[in-house]
Image (cartoon, rainbow, N blue to C red; front, top):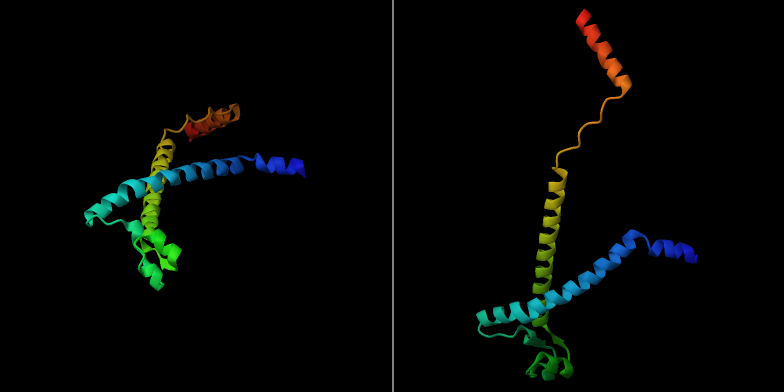
Length: 141
């Protein structure tokens, strides 16, 4: 059973998937920082200095009167639509970048496929003999 597990775990697809998950997690942190630290402050500035992280609806009286989203969460039930908006923008950026990566990879694969084909194989002795016979028969006719 241990050997079977080792064979499964060391299979190329499993290792590739693990690497993809790790790189994806790191890429997600980069995109989170890009959205949270660069894009959303710019969007907030364009819309009058708004900070989307503090956009919320308090579902209780205490949560409605809280000055920040963190304080509202501590005070009671809240709907944090600013955080949702930030995560949605984050997703759109990740999806766009992944689209560009896949598009670039497809373009590279097409370039490789468009490479000139290898020279055809040389005919065998039997094929050469059959070609000579065909040519002789054509000459007689």
